[in-house]
Image (cartoon, rainbow, N blue to C red):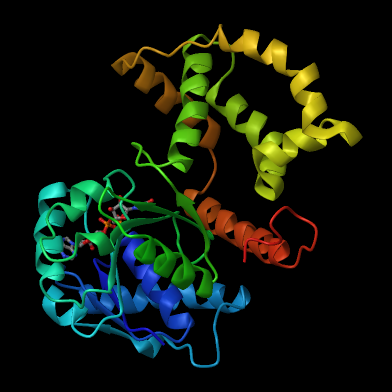
Length: 316
Ligand SMILES: NC(=O)c1ccc[n+]([C@@H]2O[C@H](COP(=O)([O-])OP(=O)(O)OC[C@H]3O[C@@H](n4cnc5c(N)ncnc54)[C@H](O)[C@@H]3O)[C@@H](O)[C@H]2O)c1
């Protein structure tokens, strides 16, 4: 059991707290919001049935392992691992990293959930041990979506990366180590590449927002969730696999790349996207849509965890 400090218990931090507690870790949290205790208790209660259905609760796991304390210093005192989930503001995070670095032991990893900041920027505030600072970027909600991107900064040690990869794996996450710092890490860059083309297609009136959603969710998105884009492409080559696809379908694709454009990022484009989004969701109860998405996502994650023949085994 490692004592975990969770700094910031909003959308992401509360879900991490529940996941660590489900695995029997003591979790010490802090958040300046006045209703932090009630908010976190409710958030952990909401996550718990899903954690149980995913069989992620070990014998010693309990929501009671999560406590709320009044300061960062108290939360990190005695912690073996820190997961920071404060707002995405570099000044605020710098203050936190300076403080945490001054308190926790030299071998305690300080991982940031940040979607957009770099470990190098964060560790610059740590004068004692910048080598234990890294990005541990989850996908929302962390207790349900297995992926976490682990990215070191210029000063991050291999030992810190290894420790984070081991801990995340031990709580059922599916971590990948990203070997260079890039804006958006890797997964959000892949999404952004798709959105770039989708925005342009909508701007040009080729398809609507709803049609793009259908194109992916009724098409390749189904296979991507099981295999990822490369193994999906490999299977489209039949027995000859990826080598054949690259030979046969690669050259036309390279020609398509020449036709790729970027939409103009104008108020008109944003208004078009939002109006078409409203059209797509007309008559749909969005809170039910969210519940249904999470229920189906959970079923998919559970089904994948029982799969024997997917690349890399199951995610968990
Ligand atoms: N929301 C997402 O989809 C998502 C996904 C992956 C990563 N992230 C990253 O996670 C981090 C948190 O994002 P979020 O969506 O949970 O934000 P959020 O606004 O829901 O939560 C942030 C919490 O931090 C608290 N906070 C403010 N100042 C603090 C301080 N000094 N110390 C401790 N806590 C403080 C706030 O009261 C709030 O509860 C960000 O770095 C973000 O980039 C978000």
